[in-house]
Amino acid sequence: MANILYTYKNSVYVNLTNKCDCACTFCIRNHKDSVGDADTLWHKTDPTREEVKAAMDAFDFTGYDELVYCGYGEPTCALDVLVDTAAYAKEMYGVRIRINTNGLANLYHGKNVVPCLARVADCISISLNAPTAEEYMAVTRPRFVNAFEEMLRFAAECRQCVEKVQFTVVDVLSREAIEKSRALAQSLGIELRVRHYE
Image (tube, rainbow, N blue to C red):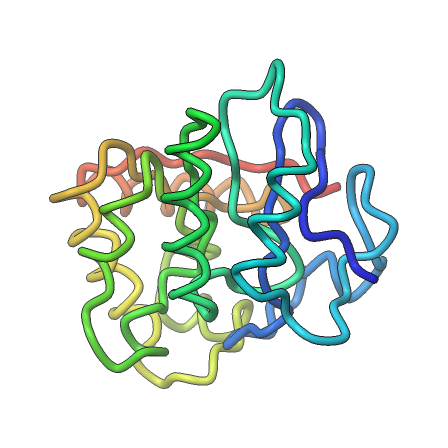
């Protein structure tokens, strides 16, 4: 059985689903079956909200103040389970909630889901991946043709109602692409974090 909760460095992560509407060229799940202390992050079937809550109840949150929705899939693909279990974690364990996302939830669900996420998220971290639509499409390989523009729109909407919003890029990008990504993020009033590719 795949790990639902796992730890990596100083954070606790929720591996909610293996569904994803992108096929990023650098995705770690193409190279290994787990990260952190997980045995495997590949689910045979995605966990139910009851299974996620049971995993939370069995976990000792002492010393952890943040719960991150990020695993081997896009967490917003399991939106209802995400929102329900994040609210449960906040109420029962007093943790802050960060959602690591590709920013395509509105496209995936065909409606604006930002208000749902804003009810539970203290931080939304969005994979920017590239500074232009052309580069983004080549690297991220999303199933939506207008993904880059919609991801930026999603980020701008999140910024209106979520305490902290950030973009991320992985340091496999050139220095020039990272600086262009930083300029794009700044134009939207959003911080850029450069992640080290493990």
